[in-house]
Image 1 (cartoon, helix red, strand yellow):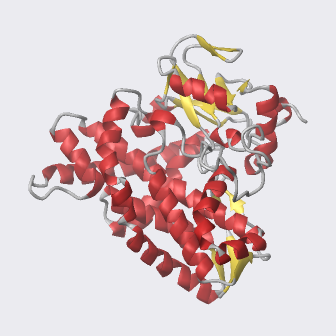
Image 2: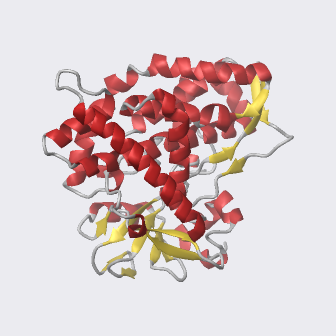
Image 3: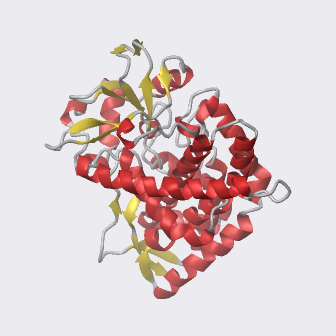
Length: 410
């Protein structure tokens, strides 16, 4: 096996297929310093869970991220250059984190999410049927990107007619964490993020102006209530909306793209799921384990400490690699394969862990199930288009397709 130092973290080949690198990290350097930076990659479950539990040592606040330097090397980008930090939901520490979650959770309850299924199914058929009728097309552009963004807007309480703009902002925003982004591109991304912040602030202010007997619908109405009651500030509310607008569409876009790619490459698995559609939720869990939508999340080191055998200085960062844990053979035998009878199916870390478990996990699972049910029920087969190639977004952070050309047979 190669050593971690044999891999170039930002090389396109490593980004497209990171799993040999993750295996080397797990076996040889579970806390591995990115050369020339104070960023450390953490790749084993015990150490990641320890970091999550030690909140006095490791902050969820997003203070810095890797980017590509002038010579192609990884360097740290200080996010204070974008102005105030977006320390909300996934990026918030206690007690603020608990307050933020409490305001969002009423809109992602089991009953509330289940009630969305007819709407999501109608949208899925609306997008999938034309693709099947033509017989080919880009799954990402036609389904995987627009549907989750529309669902996010619905739950949050943003205008559905703004979906295209929200999608553009969200996908641009995740470039902040991609690692492959240059300093020049960061300036553009920062400007676009500023536009999204201004848009969300405008809609939150509208929700604040709504009368008490007719509150704004969705999460944004709950955030307005939180501001009025002094639970959060207006800037906190905007920060929460920024996180939801970015992650809400990103997670399911990545999940459905990866799931469809797996099925397109495995016709026997397609046939099995068509014959037994009750296995689709099981397949969704395997798909997100195999290709975790978010490869990892950062933590900031709050004081001099250590993790495992590695000393960490105050101000350094660790990147907790969920995706590395999810292919650990010690946890998941035959980890690179789909196993629909896997006994520990939901023990993956694709939705995070503990206090920061993804608030949108239930919605992402529902969207993926409904989309796959409609696609499989309406096709005899689908495969990758030999005339074009799938491409992943070049990112340390997300595992999302930039394009996924398919050929479909009704």
